Length: 251
Image 1 (cartoon, rainbow, N blue to C red):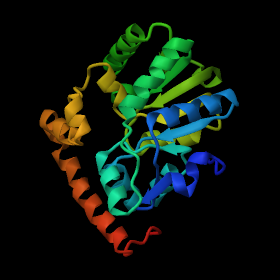
Image 2 (cartoon, rainbow, N blue to C red):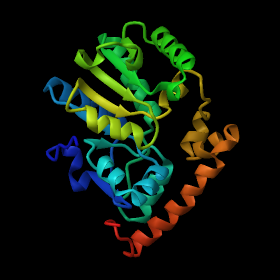
Image 3 (cartoon, rainbow, N blue to C red):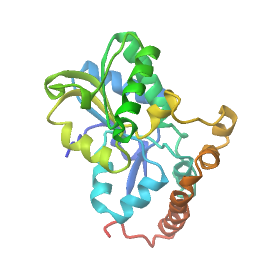
Image 4 (cartoon, helix red, strand yellow):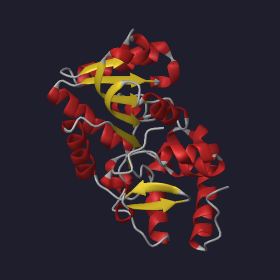
């Protein structure tokens, strides 16, 4: 499992533990600075993008909590994490979504002609995955973007960035298992972030994102998420238990 306890982002003053999972209190500029610094020093960096659903799953599955806590940077992708941090008395600086980070990294890849690998795009639907690659190459023509599933011998190639998009749990497990073995500088658990950048999913207007109701927007457009939103209720209850010091992180 990839661990780097010397990472400055793991310092207590720069993070908060919510339901046993460390989340970094940081902003986009800080994350990008850390990424550039690590790349310049030739060090690999592992980034995860948890939301409340992740933390509930991690509470129920200690193996996943351990994986999340192995990240060099763990950004607060869900507004619920920001609210929880305030309840716990250690407010995060704000929400940093996986979509915004992915978009900025792809722009940097385009500017610097980086090689970018993507695994698990569109949950393995080949036709959609290939269409997504086409759209990304059109948007970022100078970046060298490949789907790993369609790239023989990718394990021996050098990658500046790899986006793992298999979904919660699977993508993080893939990342920690592969980071030590492959020539990749940055691995990020991206979930469905690339879907928003390529039009497969519709993102909420900016004003809805700013007031923290992007989750509701997604629920309106993707009503099948209703069942998943039940995890938010459990998340709120677990945060209350943590506030009351009645939560055992070891179980």
